[in-house]
Image (tube, rainbow, N blue to C red; front, side):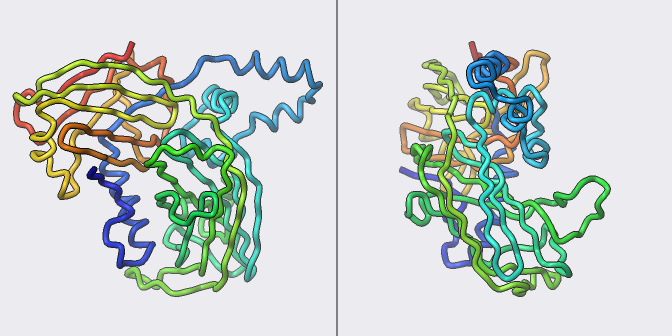
Length: 346
């Protein structure tokens, strides 16, 4: 089995190099993918039932459905989408905090799905230290159930502060994100995750990094999410540049997509695309009812293949209602003619 998992390239260089490469490639490669599903609008009914049965107060109800503002902004989630993902148990609040050397790291919220988990942290440095998106932690480790490197990941400080709009940029508090890629599609729900950061570093220009604060910050909690993926069995053959491609299935969730391919022409298409040289097999687009396309694919992903099978996963960095999805187009750019196929989503 071959795979393109960008965190494992160049193992001899520092972790931050991997994170930078991963983030860059995620942005470039995953701008070629799109899939998403949103569930039925049952949240108000469920919430009303909870309130009636348990006597939940209005304040508690507001807390139940409250997303962190930065998380909502990061995924461009409107109120209806936020409520839906709360109803579907995709989002969880963490509120675990650790302080060392005057720097406080708080795990805020998570968004989970079958192909990965997004983690949002708040980092507050001592007065006099300015945090920017050029800061980094010298070391970051992620353990799932005590197993280090149990998940591939990338991350970094977000490009704006987490203060209110009237606060100036360049304060001592900033959000930090980690994307976990669940390439094995293991069940992480209810599993203990431990994230450790070490040594806050700053940029002395031209990526001349130096340690600004020494320390180690470790947080542990139980992951909580319910995946709502829906599988569409396609089982249809297509011709791409004279090569047969068989679309087996497409799995969609509000936050990710998985595409499974086969076919007698797959081996040649893989060779033409240069997957062994860090290429990618195709560029996908989601087709919406209004004729527009959805291409917000900034999360992590992977490609795994043999001579006869190919699987690609992608995590979205925006939310899309699957009810608005009519089809998916795969564009095989390495082929010069008849290089696209469109799959209808029932």
